[in-house]
Length: 109
Image (cartoon, rainbow, N blue to C red):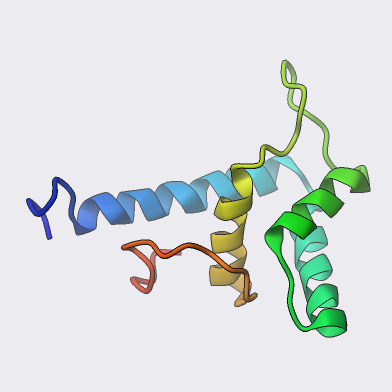
């Protein structure tokens, strides 16, 4: 692990913590976003048998719940979709598709 390829378990756990922190920061700054995403995903699952974070984020952008932070022109950057997918997959068990990462399965999220 450590010393193999310049990384190690501690590096991956740090990355997992950063991902969780980024999702939590976004959700804390946008009250209502967590419930909106969860409810949208659950509705999608019930209606279609699948859901995607990309769809949930597009619907969230259109919901009127988000306000850009001062000095920003957008409230939800596309890079957050993968962060939010991992967060909701870990917290709620929602079946969002995510790319494999070394820290998957370590219980860090």
